[in-house]
Image (cartoon, rainbow, N blue to C red; front, side, top):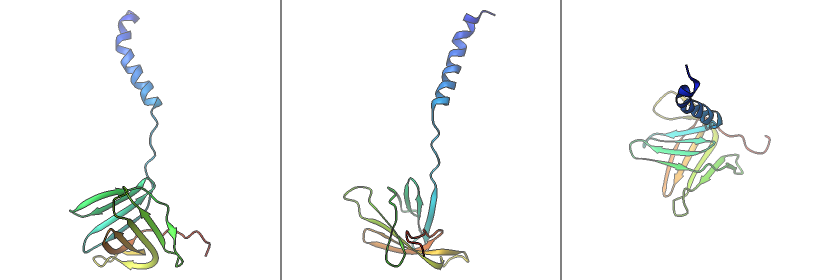
Length: 134
């Protein structure tokens, strides 16, 4: 078979291989903790690429990741805003045994979420360690 006849067929396949070889795979975001509460049902996934807030059946919002500060009591405090006019999003997690009230699942942390004028209580799956060694 004449190689010149195969060239038009092989060029698109070779181009696709080159593009896929050059494309870098994005690493998947790391989930650092999940805080959730009931009545009303809400959750926050704190990930390496941002914080996803969800209220079941109501809304979902994404906030930029902010490294937690640690207050005098050793609680991790995440503060973030999406835009200048948006209400402050603040998640406080403290090391304390927690039960979500609807299941027998136990959590290592308690969570308090404040978003604008609303505050919700819940539990957290992971409690970040404070910056000082205890």
